[in-house]
Image 1 (tube, rainbow, N blue to C red):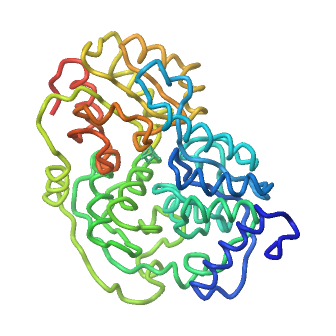
Image 2: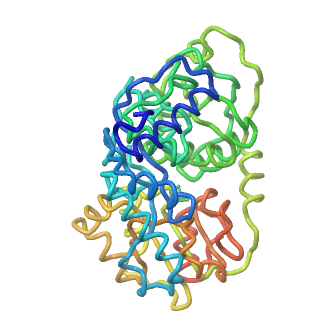
Image 3: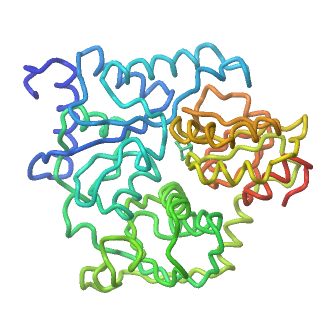
Length: 392
Ligand code: F3S
């Protein structure tokens, strides 16, 4: 492959993996069973995926793709600049040419591309990397879109970092004394822990009850956005360590941090850039699950979103299909909202965000600063703001 006998695209992918392996002193390549490329409609992605596609590369293991752009909404919701739309279209076309799974979702581990315990994989994307390491117990490094795609093309990755058990040792003990009532509190906790730890493997004690899927997704996405958390432990609830001692592999933590409601309140305040009335509510960062879409439908049932407010719920095509069948989509649409697939807040084509005061339940969505100003709040408050302009 490295010598070009399997084509120029495969050679380029292998060159990248060899360079990464050299940089990290990897002893060898190991097979992977699947990959997830954090694709986006941006020029860097376009350059690399077209380079591989033009060179005839094809994925050797299932390789799913991140949100890019929903072609159906091109003229319906906003004017999208033609050059930005063209970049996104070419990215999507090139991923098709390399034989990727065109999931266009940042939560592929829920339905389109699910690793099993102990599998070695190459997953990029903020929630995906920590989720598959910590919740599922698969092995992945914190990949880039390009390294994950290269691994998907080759079917291998260099053996270093979190592919080695000893490197999966906890670094920081987090004593959680906050109340953690719902999934929004897990977003704040994730954001706080990511910022406090930076680069490391936190071990959290004091989690009051088994967290649900959405709470875990939120913790993963936010801790790997405000920091670089590729893996964490909730001993007793995540799979690899049932006891704190096991999570630290017998060592003592390098650092201990306590989190109370006061710290989470501080994060909440820090995330608000305005108290102005929102004119764009954006939910689904990470992509909403079917359960979350159902909750939105319940909150909007029989109500109307203000004429001067946009309301988007971003999700995967698979969740949308089930939301359609379950009647959630029609309830949201009757209220004046949209259930949007294949895209996300962080796509350059959605320039219309820039003039808006946004409101979201996602600190990650706020962090990208695609909006002019942004407010971050619980789902219920986002819905109230869209309907009657109130909401905290
Ligand atoms: Fe997903 Fe985009 Fe948010 S990739 S986590 S919806 S910024």
